[in-house]
Image 1: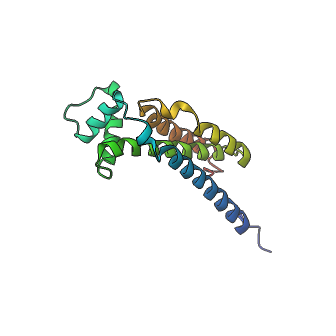
Image 2: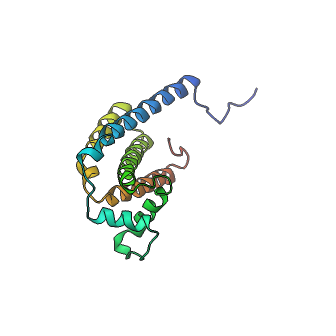
Image 3: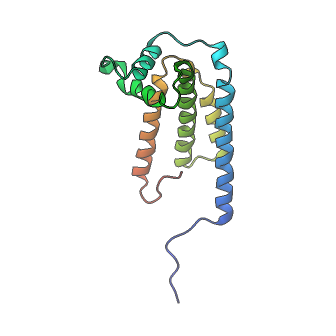
Length: 167
């Protein structure tokens, strides 16, 4: 008699259900980001404060090295994306949309990793999506939240080595 298998592969139905749920959340995040950013350039001007300095430093390849408290990594982030979106004004709005989508996806992954059920995830994600923190310039705050989100995911993976990250 053969011993029972140690590996427990997910059932095909469960995989299908998980894929459907992931697709739902991806559509929710995409729809939210598109809805909030589609006409953003028409009703909100660029914030001519710190954000434009980060944008300028990123676009011009650090003509001057910004001090550490002026977020050189964030300026570098702008520099990387400027290779894909060369227009500075579009880059500004693209960056806002990208950071919003990334943060929403990270919140979803974190809540899923801790084992939260679908309905509470929807409620928390909707609450987080409409928080005003995404509209407060400069967006370096949202950029920092991306790093914090990945750090939380790393910690969750480290404290659950047997289960792994549920993403």
